[in-house]
Amino acid sequence: MRDVYVIGVAQTPFGKFLDRSVKSLTREAVTGALNDAQVEKQNLETAFFGNAMQGLVTGQEMVRGQVALRAMGIDGIPMVNCENACATGSTAFHLAWQSISGGHADLVLAVGAEKLCMEDVKKMFQNYDVGMDVEILEALRTQWAEEARRLSEVGKDENKLRSFAMDMYASMCRVHMEQFGTTQEDLAVVASKNHNHSVHNPFAQYQKAMTVDEILAGRMVVYPLTAPMCAPIGDGGAAAVLCSSEYLKRLSEVRPVKVRASVLSSGTDRPAGFGPEHISARLSRKVYEMAEVGPDDIDVVELHDASSLGELIQFAGLGFSTWEDAAEMARSGATTLGGKIPVNPSGGLVSKGHPLGATGLGQIAEIVMQLRGEAGKRQVDGARLGITENGGGFLGVEEAAMTMHILESQ
Image 1 (tube, rainbow, N blue to C red):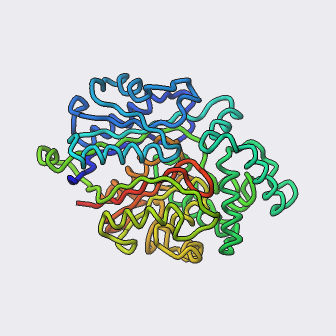
Image 2: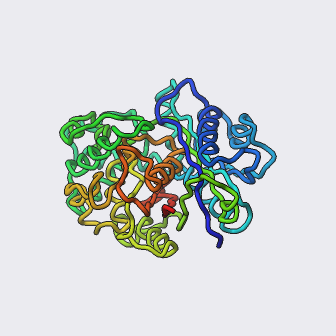
Image 3: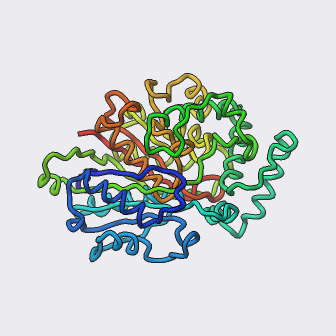
């Protein structure tokens, strides 16, 4: 395989933008990434476009990338439309990496854009139902609601206006609590850390510090998750320009970051619970082997926390702690900026935001900035190796899809 480098990244702010379109978000992200890479759009050889829900939101079921990119003058090249639920943008990045590492192209664009916010709030939440097997959705909703009622105080799970994802995460929380003794306060510690990180991120949907007590006092979504423990619905775009080592030699004054490893996999049918068979544990072993590094070599982490439980799950799955000790690591401050292994300096999904198609590429952009030393007040000192983990959808007892990438400063 050929070496692959990221030479340009950019993202829009994440937030609720009712007046914006996928085209405008794409244009802003791609223009920024091209400017960062100091290359012209006419030199791009291939583009991978990530979007999960535009068909549901606007009716644009097909050729989404061609529509969005042609509007900004990019056409006449191979374009592939990617959808992998919440892992859509990182899947586009993986395919861009494959294209270059396999010798099929030298300069490739990966872009993800998502327009999720809409006036019809009920429909906005219902759109998330398609992130799992819709044939069994109602049966699962009934099961999850019964679990929540058994374990919560009366009235605590009465907020019906929520996505299926939060019911799923709440059910996973309850399994995690039973298996490892995790508490609601543990989740609040993780959420507070990420909200505090987001204060320093101008791209974050939320930029307000929150204490553990404020997290616990937040509106109950579904037990044990309060609103500040859950990623908000929002819009946004993010993009990366990748190139081969041969193409890199043509450029001057760029700040390349090497892609040491890129992996993509899907979940498996297995019993519920967390351990070495979990998708993140299986995939992390593969990504570390490809990169020829281990968890102890990683300096900064961006991982998928659509709810704050996600951080505890993926932190252990990535090998930074045992499954039993993940919450204790969070409580110790090890995952905070300045700690042993900073996690989600961007603020994570619960604070930075989660516009599905852009999320994974937003993680890539953050790690690239960290490895270049360009992250400002959220900079991890001396960061040389960074990892991203991005899960998408849900089937059985784990994510339907997942990507991981390890990037290295040059």
